[in-house]
Image (cartoon, rainbow, N blue to C red; front, side, top):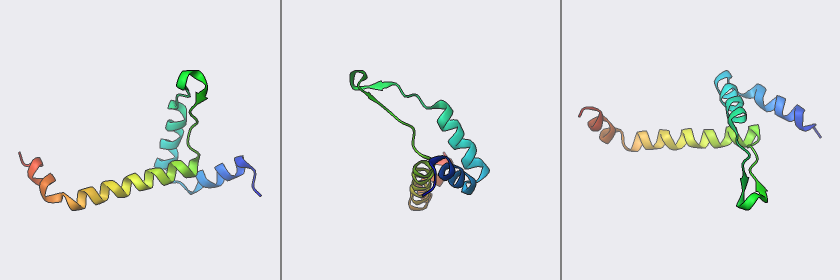
Length: 78
């Protein structure tokens, strides 16, 4: 079994430089402000969860653009 730091290093080494930079910015900007009266804290996503979430968002944006390209073009022409 890999150590957590080894796993993070492996995952981040598979990221593109842009993805790695965005993940590092996400970590540096993360605010673990107490939730629900101070009893619960948010934790940042792991590198693999963050990467998966971003890939799903990219796919959703691509699908939106494909399905609405005519409408988006019409709006751009206004």
